Image 1 (cartoon, one colour):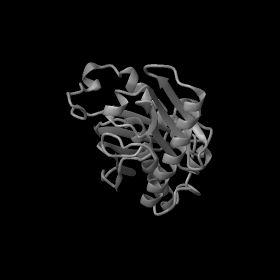
Image 2 (tube, one colour; image 1 turned 120 degrees about the horizontal axis):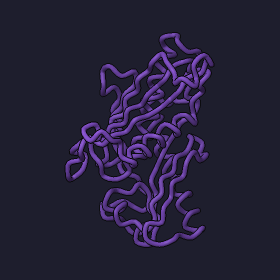
Image 3 (cartoon, rainbow, N blue to C red; image 1 turned 90 degrees about the vertical axis):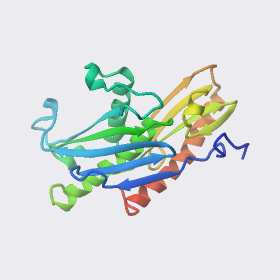
Image 4 (cartoon, one colour; image 1 turned 180 degrees about the horizontal axis):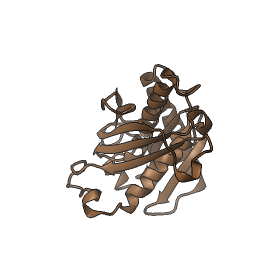
Length: 244
């Protein structure tokens, strides 16, 4: 199984996952999703409108926004609203979250509605984008379940789960769910987004210090698949064993 990591975990072990449903009263679906010390609030808003390119087509849309709150890190992060400019990292992550959710949404079943998921990082300790995706999926599913309960859609438009995990090579070995100390020292850093049955939605991998081999890539994807199944169990536990 390999030696334990700095926080005592084995190489393939996830940090503890904790989920609190309904943390925002006015959101159609909301969740506080925690993976270890990384904590993200994800809130879904449903609006009876769609982007101009979809108007009149009978199809909906899902999008996301992402932000790190000022004291989510060990030094204060400036609010991007104050600077008047969305940083490249923020823009890239919120686009990733939106793409991941759209991959499992039936837009015809949703109808001409837009669901926006706001992901706000309360505390960052590595893996904020993967935690955001995992929490965003729950918020989206809850919001769409509410539409079903109200008789506004014929079925839940969310037809599969989305799970996301970080993997990497640290000290020459493959590890999953990197915390900040590991992420900052990793030779390879990768984020893997999958459906509930393990099909890939997106893979983001970077050699931070040295190129990696095909064997290492395969090992990281295998580790991500195993970790994703654990995230899936957590999502199902907090959605009553449902979600598809």
